[in-house]
Length: 306
Image (cartoon, rainbow, N blue to C red; front, side, top):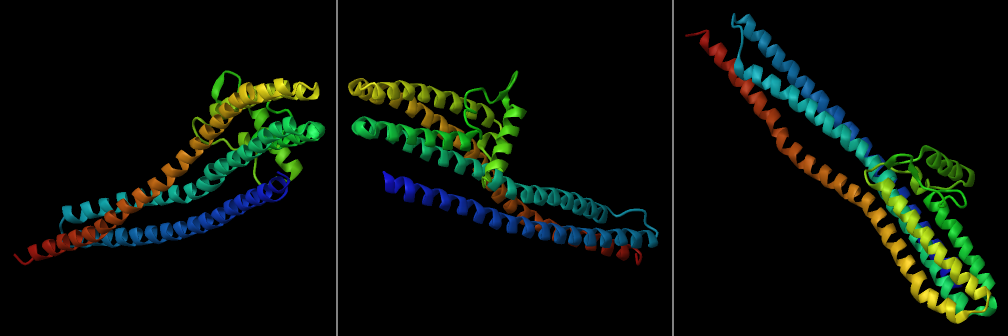
């Protein structure tokens, strides 16, 4: 247990933090690449639109009022240019959302679940090692502090509801502010979970996690009193009954909360893949528009010699 606490868990947590930072760098580079392609696309579409406008001007010089192929091509180029600009702009924004708002939330719940698991193990250890039970129970309190630090920030922040009054879909502003202040105070690399709520369903999921976590803490309080009172049989029954049931429910709530952000993460990258494929196909429309406009100008020019 000591090796796990002092070496394995910190190493895994550190690796997860490094992973998030590397992902942020990667997607930041991707966002910059998307921005460059957006500017290139806008420039190409603008240049083609200008050529088509000159084509319409040339048709006017031929004493024709209009050419449907050229006009349709111009409209198509403008619409596609605006559509692709919007999609690329959304993709650049989603690159940041995928890491800091989606995956960061998943990693935060994983960190919290790991600390909960360590705290749960300490309950059993306190029963089987009664001579050092007080030390083990104190260690439990340390993990409890880490869980609250990751979930909502300050000590005992899980005592009160996270939700705004009368709104089950929004974190209370005071709760979020206290969490952000705790991050700044402790120099935490990532914000507590309640300060990083961006997706539908996250706020009630964290509130459910808070409720189930407090239920487990109540069961732990009963177990701790039994251990301190020397009732190891009762503590064992509580550990295998009330405590494990409450713990399993809290873990399930944590998994559900993580799934909300993971679903958004998957939806974003799948959407980017889909729109990228569509835009690749639509890119040929620029060529078709140019050909249609060239045919329209050629047709009007040919009519001059009839």
